[in-house]
Length: 379
Ligand SMILES: NC(=O)c1ccc[n+]([C@@H]2O[C@H](COP(=O)([O-])OP(=O)(O)OC[C@H]3O[C@@H](n4cnc5c(N)ncnc54)[C@H](O)[C@@H]3O)[C@@H](O)[C@H]2O)c1
Image (cartoon, rainbow, N blue to C red):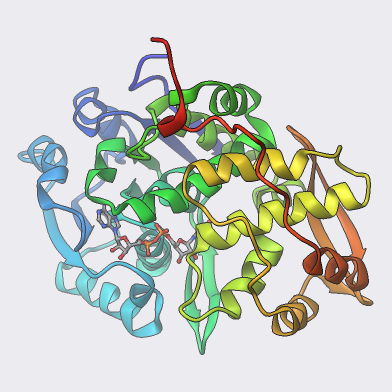
């Protein structure tokens, strides 16, 4: 597939979103950006995560010059922009720029800034359109896809939010050049999750081709697009998370408990990585998955430098957080489990079984997992 390729589309009754993967310059020159900006738009506000080099947004500035007035602001990204204060300062920027009902917000940032600024757009003048330019891998394959926006409140994550689909998501892998390697690996947790949930070709490529995971951990555009397509498929089918969209929570049950009980807090992708291997081990224990499933997932996650061994984490507080989880019903927790690639199930499992698996050893690595640095690719 050539990139930029045809966009993937999300079509809801009252909103649509075009998701492009490829060079921002080419996407913009191809007039794809213009196509998603309503003709009635009077002004644009570009909010750029302060960690993202300004030069990367040059194609947007030059294309918009002489078309629609654009004002640009730098905003501190990361979780601080999802506090009520951080969010309020984004509203202040919209006020300062005099963005009216004919305005549109472009957000270039990670998942945190996308969540906060997307939420701001959803309530500004009762809702103005927005366009997302994800600048982390996690935002490209997950956070900016699907229209969920949120901020934190009184220590509770994502307590206040809305569904507000961006008109477009423009994912350019070169945005990841400045992203630290550890942050890139966080996105791989979601990319590998997507491959398991519904991208068999991507999974096969990752598992069988030694160079399929590049050493710089910047995926190829087709790999990003394949992961995006998995999320889009589930989001289209189940926009408001009442059915199969729950499969996207593979690995997230344990991940949330780990995030709550680690200091310094595990990064999200690290927690999801542990959670996916744990869910697969549970699935094996219950004969839902064939033996070897957890090792298979674990091997892939280790290749991108993610943790897979939960044995050093304290069991009591983690079990207690799991039992407090809103998904617990009468001492049985709902777990999203991999049966086999492309076949995910949701099961209620007793906390005794969960604890038993937590006390057991994580799966061992296979003798020779395919790893870029160890491979002898003949090409
Ligand atoms: N809305 C959803 O459906 C959804 C889904 C998953 C996650 N999320 C949210 O996404 C957030 C996590 O997103 P994230 O992992 O992208 O983290 P992030 O947005 O916090 O970004 C991580 C760090 O990288 C910096 N950064 C961003 N782009 C950069 C770049 N190109 N170069 C250098 N630094 C850069 C940021 O400033 C920040 O310090 C969480 O708040 C989570 O709740 C939302």
